[in-house]
Length: 461
Image (cartoon, rainbow, N blue to C red; front, side, top):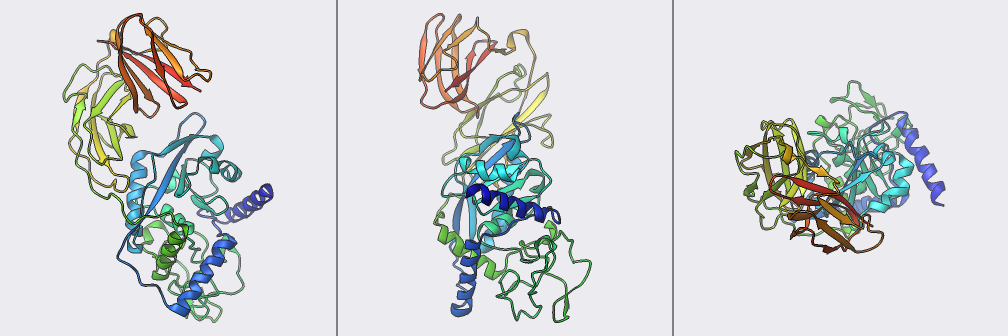
């Protein structure tokens, strides 16, 4: 049954794309049935009163690159998007937080937003009990879309820049909201047109009586350059302020009261939210190394370290040449207090770190430090060298144990590919040291000496 469903879904999605490259989302019948029931209860019981209590919703972010690991949505863009999202949803008393660390996925088809690949493979990456949002970098078929069948949101990187509302729009769909022009998608005529006077507001359009009639299923600037007429002949222009319309991002600023009530009810029905979260703005971490104004740093395998901040979920690290934050060399989220990055050349570099909680990442960076790199013969990284450091078996071939041996004494650091420190110890010359791993994956083993660093890649499988 699943292959038939995905084929039908793809045809529906790409049929809409022929007319529109913004958002081809169509809610499932189950979602529409739930929504119609909720809307009917508004008429019988009245609009639920809005509590002052904020509901916090976990989000699992997935950032997709191509098969070569290129094209990732930047960490700065993601944190800004989350801040903007929370600002947009604050009137609804809904806020979003990191469910866990960001996942990075290297997959050409998912990167291009291939609908069938999304259907068959996104479930392999999903986190249960959270909103799953995937950022990808290519494809022309849409800017953002909510896939009801697998309950995931996909957003193209270029469509969620500064002040963009694409993610807000798609999470509106996730929590049951149709387009304000529901029924007109792809330029279709729904037959029954929502009237300007609202007389048929529950059984036409989006079913909300506090959103204005809207028939425009293509992107439009505000105000609409032309005038619409309903089936009674009344002339009007649609409301450009509603996030679920197709007005330009800069026009949009709100959800209606009924829309917000529906989303709160949908969040409650999903049972994935909490009423508490750590929304503090944390103090700035103290920078440890490289030390400020140090002028003898090898650009290879630079070890960045800072002091722990109590309550930090992660640390946002940025490194830029000459302190120009418009041209950042590294922009990463680190879940430890140290990471190793490769720079290049003889340059002035500036770095800074911001501590964030999983529910607040909108604070400012504190002071930055500057250092100077210097290429030296002894400072070059010796990658995969056999004579300095031996790591075996590699790959491990199913064994949990790995042997390390070096010709000369060195300080060993074992890190995962995100830069988190797994183990560290001193390795004496020509003395075998055995290390046990409890997780599979790719690791980097650093053998640090006075003026050089040897690095080996280790695959634990």
